[in-house]
Length: 599
Ligand code: HEM
Image 1 (cartoon, rainbow, N blue to C red):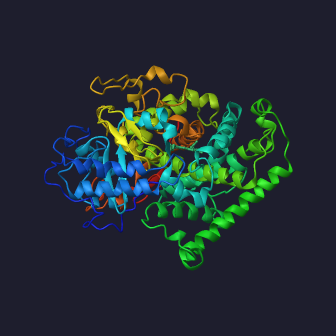
Image 2: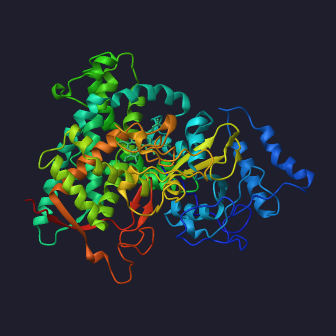
Image 3: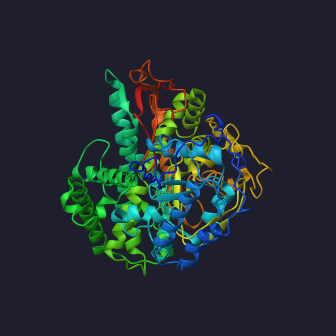
């Protein structure tokens, strides 16, 4: 979930610098939305000195078997990549061009936008070096499908796992393949239908404090609300109650535990942006004030989770999986996912593993949903016609009731709004992988490439979602696009988008789009909380949009800023975009709130 950007210390000269302007590469304008793999031909290997291929191949011959340390392979690759760059006339034998451009394009906290510009110049995949690291950037559905589904066992979470391990331990996201296999099998059934149906009511309950707070704001003199913060709070309350039966109450109060959650999130984000893992240096955790604070917050959080786990274990009632899946949740005093995991027969999990699972869920399921709610409200406020249609649907289906599971099924337009928001603002915008063994990726709409063992990779979901070869008018907010089929015969191996393939599902998924739409990833490591998240976002939007109207707070729209209707990726945009683990606003979503006049 973390976008790594180990950029800040890399200089723009010297062996390990690769980002400089190349006058030979003609930049397309920033409005171009498709990439052309032919814009930068990969140099031919004909006429090469005999030693070049030997230099390139030598480190590969020395690489060990999957599962062994990969440091050598990785360093060797970087060295080669840098040699390729310095002696620019030699081809890249893995088939990928080396991206060159202004460092500022990706160093300002919006890395995914810089990567999109390189994609327009270089196609997919291209290679990027910063500091002592190099990454392959994949921006093609056929290639993404290959890495995530067909060759998924050849890849692991690499640098992401290294960053998250101190926080999430062996939770599902950073877990090594062996641990992951066991835990995934036990966690997936916990997201069963009876629980999800019950949760819809619980989501409604968690939204009540938000509705009350917005009511108070609407009645106040200035009517101002920073909605991103409110959505973060409601998402935290929902995760707390549904995953481990803990009431954060964060919409209405602050507490040391809530602060500790945010500290963990901020630290995960900070680490993702820091080139040198100084937290691994001996004694750093005792001496660096920032790390001392983080460790004490993490301890606090771990203690809370340990206590909840102990309590759940003390009251353990072992049941078979089938019995658990048929629980009548209306009569259960603790409906949490923790309870399910503890009660499952045969799942005698140690406390540390359970804590890692809970922490992972807390972090993975909180900011992501808050972000989709924030950007949905942002886009709906910019598109009043969509907002009106959504409100008419909510009035018709739900009215003043708390939504039920059946209601969510009928709120199709609202779900399309959520899907379209996730297309434009994927959370996270990049997936991270590391190659465990040499692998060839297919050309798709780009070029074939050989990925060597140890190579780090970004799968740039943001680029795929905003490419007009897969999504016509890609920057346009158009929820109804998911009702129209689309194909593009120019992309070999891409089956196109077929709306009939997600009938009876909650959202248009990666199967219907043949991996051109990946809001929840795809393949074996696909999000386990996808339906949970769509239900949660639909309930929250239904309850909020039924009762309130919003307008942008003009205090944030000053003369020196561009219009609210411009692309939020512009740095002078009043809302703006910034990458952390997810796409945040740069300046907050400042709104004026008004009660809705209902007939
Ligand atoms: C809108 C909300 C959400 C979005 C956009 C989202 C997105 C994603 C994506 C893209 C992945 C794949 C990561 C990868 O392949 O590297 C993922 C994995 C995961 N997500 Fe979500 N997620 C959301 C909500 C949730 C919720 C609510 C939960 C739990 C309650 C959750 C739990 C997880 C877990 C445990 C994984 C790791 C799965 C594995 O590796 O087996 N997510 N999510």
